[in-house]
Image 1 (cartoon, each protein chain N blue to C red):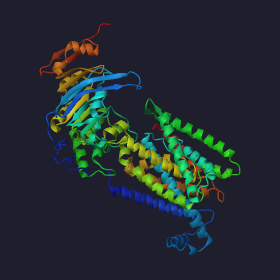
Image 2 (tube, one colour):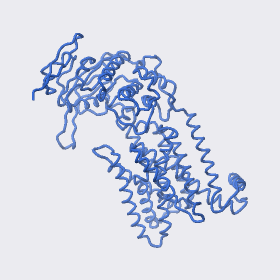
Image 3 (cartoon, rainbow over the protein chains, first blue to last red):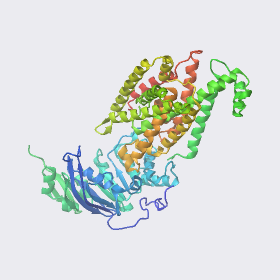
Image 4 (tube, chains in turn blue, purple):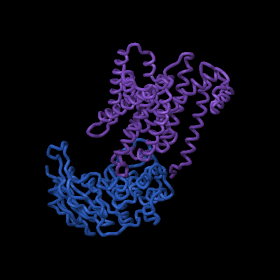
Length: 288
Length: 346
């Protein structure tokens, strides 16, 4: 049985469990991290102190070149890694000290796709998102089925319900994975390069869906991505990382400076401001 | 959307229990000495009523005192191996994992052989001496799975092919040590030992060992069943499972110890019987789906049915002589293993 506090009675607003509404939901406070192969050696990679805050309904994009520490920062926010210093607060809880179950009730992570070992249907996969609410040996009840149905509907994937997960397209698969994350009824939705392997139409579609979900369900969304223009279009805040250092945090318009982006990504480009006030990056041909 | 219900699980298990019952009756009837169904029924009822002295005939004695304990042993061993195989497949994310392939059975056998060698020197009371072998087998199983798990990793990740190779190499290495130990044993029944190593259900057990086997099976299988929901998520990887609220370390520990107990008990009473733990879970997955909340109990029934059938064949095809049951399961199992390997599901 899921506890009353978490069962969704407010259909169709899936994520809106009764919760204290404070302005700042996610607070990343000076978190740092170091990877090393061997504790006695100098770290191979260091993430320097990072800070930013996000409110419910906000989308934060973490940008940066390869090996700049984007995924590490995401894992720290998820509480999967314990920071070397600093802390990540989600509604006042330190994320990495939460018990796995309590954490999964608050934070949903959409990762780069992992292969399934044995075939499963989409609905079975989506129902897995109810796992953090179940006790040992509990079978899913009608509430769980309703929540899973709503989650599939919210991402426009009702018709995928009975399909096998290994037979759906990349875009469809990403929708089902997102639906499973919604089933967790999280406060914080984390996505690690969700647009990887998707065609441009599916990419726009996914981010538009995220935008809508963040607004409807009051999720705080943090997404790691390489797509500068999609981030500019859909994010409220951008964190730009380079070699484990956060260079700038702010609105896309304030972060997307031509010389800054050129220096970070090592390629000539131009930045123009669109009619909606959001910046747009155009790559220039390089002279070789 | 058709989520699993207790009712459906109950129906599936009832169906399999009914099949198991039919198989057991057939197994009781078949054998070197023919028995009529009527006589069988009459004798079973008198046993249930504790009127063992009123047994009608020598046939009844054969059925009740030789065939029935052997069939019950096959049920427990088959179910143990099958549940252990199911949980190894989920825990190691490898569809070809099972106690035999991973060398865990060989490790358990080595533990059991070492215990047999050491035990006469310890002057233990009889009931404890009977438990010494299964305990050695459990230690052997646990040590082997730890070693194979360690060797099967590449850059901190379990690698499917490396894991299987590590298992196969461990199995042959451990078998070689067992062979060596056996040749140094003088005055022992070499043939009996060889038969046991191939998998054999004909040995009669001490009463204390019967209790340990029964209780150990239900405790270990029950412990694994409490992680059934977690195992479903572990199939998608440990990181993924962790983000869905699975306490990965706890699940790994529970399954690791419980599966070692199941393998150790099964091997100490019946030797290394292969392929039951590998194939039965796959058949049950095809029939009932890959949700571990159904898969674990149905695999237990399926393993029991498969091993009772295999043992019945083993003692009837060359009657009045008999084959080791491990040879029987290997004859049926090896082709299916190759099929799974070729299908590229590894």
